[in-house]
Image 1 (cartoon, rainbow, N blue to C red):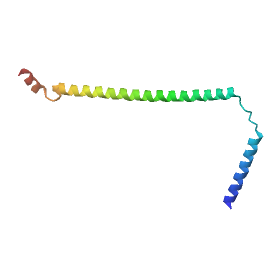
Image 2 (cartoon, rainbow, N blue to C red; image 1 turned 180 degrees about the vertical axis):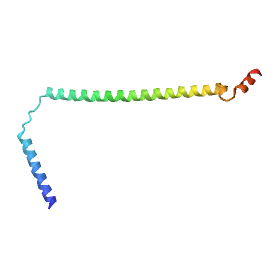
Image 3 (cartoon, rainbow, N blue to C red; image 1 turned 30 degrees about the horizontal axis):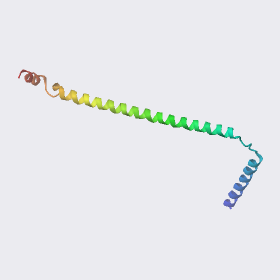
Length: 100
């Protein structure tokens, strides 16, 4: 029963929508107007594509900068640890090595 009720409501809604569509007269557009609409749509789509490309390029640039920074810091840290004997030896041992 409820199903039949829902179907009848859907049919009434569709009939009302069809009547509204029939009542509205849509003027046909000239070829120039259609071309103008197509050009506007094309410009809008191209702008979106360019904006997306810029966002992707910016994200990639940031990732590359972070990776480069990490690489440099890793090299600096590794070099500092390998060259700084004070980190591994106490002062007395280091002085003894310098004398010999």
